[in-house]
Image 1 (cartoon, rainbow, N blue to C red):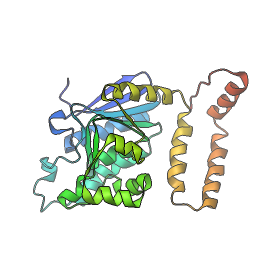
Image 2: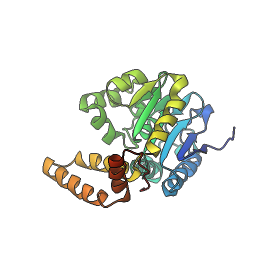
Image 3: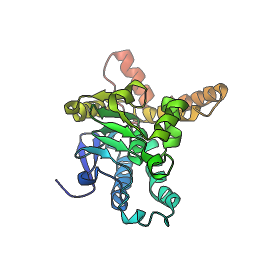
Image 4: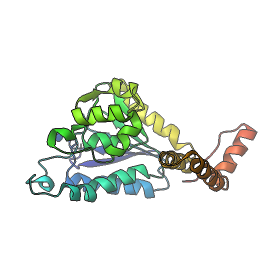
Length: 262
């Protein structure tokens, strides 16, 4: 296998992005960031890509920031906020605004920014042996890579605080039970399950799926009336699209739809 920190493979309309620093549990470095964000940007800009899977090699999905990376050398002197702004804000923002669905296939430990990077994705599938750790409190920091926004919305304030303050490991089965992730599957089935879901999503109306993500996220900070207005405005736009016409025509003629918008 290549020693590049990020690998990309195409499976039809599905782009697979693999974090590839297994000896360090795929922890983030400046070198990995230099490959990961461009890989996501390339997938976003490629009209032939209609779903993305992100996974890791070896025993981990991503153990968060590699504290041995030169970017983090001299922990007492560095500007951690600048590291967040340089790497993690663009990464989290890109994943949350992809024009196609993004699946995290969590194959092992996901800790710190690695856990929250996974939670930024639209679907989180986890191997039964995988775990999630909000490790920030153990080094005197707060959840980043979107974690402070994501955690209370996914599991509520009490559980969000419990996970963030304790830094305790959360197993994949419990993560599914409390609604932190979409699905826990047997280890051997993870990659096939993720690919099957991605292939299914790739046949669906990509623009409508991306807009669904946007309106749900936006509605979290709206009152009910504003959410209804947003729904009407979005439906007005989507109602003029190829995919709406195609979906209706396919339904009426009882044939499979061929969606093209993105």
